[in-house]
Image (cartoon, rainbow, N blue to C red; front, side, top):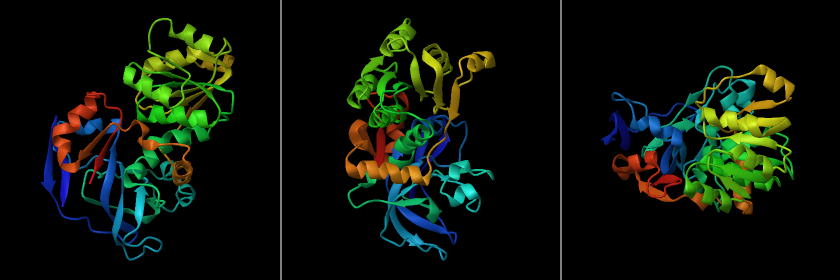
Amino acid sequence: MKQIKAFGPQDLRIVTVDVPTLAADEVLIDMKACGICGSDKWFWYVEEPNDYVAGHEAAGEVVAVGADVRELQPGDRVAVNNVKGCGICEACQAGQFVRCPNGIIHMGFGFSEKFAVPERNCLKLDNSVSYEVGSLIFDNWGTPYSAISRTSMKAGDHVVVIGCGPIGLAAVRLAKLRGAIVAAVDPIPARLEAAQSQGAEFVAFPEEGLVQKLLQFTKHQGADLVLECSGKATSYTLALGILRIGGTLVSIGEGAKFEFNSSEWIHRHLTLIGSLYSTMEAGEQVQRLIVSGDIDPMAFVTHKFKLEDIPAQFGKVIEYSEGLLKSIVVR
């Protein structure tokens, strides 16, 4: 089967490898669609050949099942939760693999014609949900859905989303569904336009004077919640400048390092919530929102590529060139 592997910096190649051998609890999936996530950029910058294959937003058709598989069968259409836990702990039994205390594995390998995953990581797709839409359920939409679900966000809350990549754009829409009044911050004009299309009432570039503009947006009460989706240290400085007393900062974007002053958090009674990826329940809820028409995951998908296109086109994804917001690999 065909697969995309990284051999060095900006050196992706199509290779032919064996079809994976199934473990007893696994299913073999014929990849039909795989979203390209910003976190996949590591694939473009590896220093030497790497056997791990990117692509963690996958959906496809089950074509074979292991001996212990009970619910799925060949022909089933599924979206895949990419994070694998131990499978036996309380969290895993509840479909919360991302919270497994015994360690998690990011399975990847979506940039392949076929890949194997545990049956428990698969969500059957509704007949009305395409593979392309299905590929966006767990990460692009499930990640912000899981994060927001951990908050007390309610109608009328002032919410600021910092970083309007695909996850931030989904966060804007999901906050609007809760009746929040949403502002969006990002340095890229096309993203701010997309944020407005998802319901943001106020959009702004990260520039001097932004704190005052956002405070004015909140009628000088401060933001009830800030959803940090950029992974930038400066976003935390901005968040602290605009959160009201008793406000909540939800950390979704990875990689930021910033100075933490406990006195500031204590005296302002702030809450910090960290949330990684998606649970199976969140994926189910996202699919319900899709079927009901409350969200449209394809609304900001701007580019589609064939598997064979990845080596030549992946740089475009990394650089967000040609107005790219969200891209999907399709077969």
